[in-house]
Length: 189
Image (cartoon, rainbow, N blue to C red; front, side, top):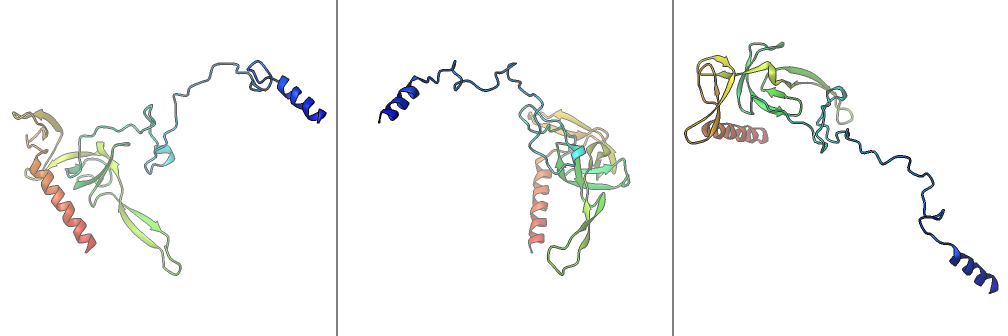
């Protein structure tokens, strides 16, 4: 009993104050903590290692403004498919690339998913840079740069510089949405 009382007395005499050994860290800080501004980007949208772009301070990728939108008719002005006309189906704003319907096909070799099933060679539409396309007028068959103007009702629209044709209109968007729904229904059937 006396031994336990002596042990309790010696433990009570130990203090865990910040000045004691137990209250301090083993390595005292030599300099103030460093805050890193260059954080790595946690969001990588199917990019190759050499295609990764810089990030904003909140670690989100920088999204670029582009002169084209989904549903626009464009003419390819550079590359293997130069001179072809197609419609934009997808946009990747983080690296300014677009996918044009039935243009820039690449072959992809796919492994078999089940045992005994042979592999496939599939043609897919690869993205191209948005600077390699120009907006195209189907009515007048001419490619043109895009301009921006404000109409009398206060709506901001895009138009073709050469022809003056307005691209952004509610009718065009409704038509594009209806075509998209029809394609989904056909794929499902």
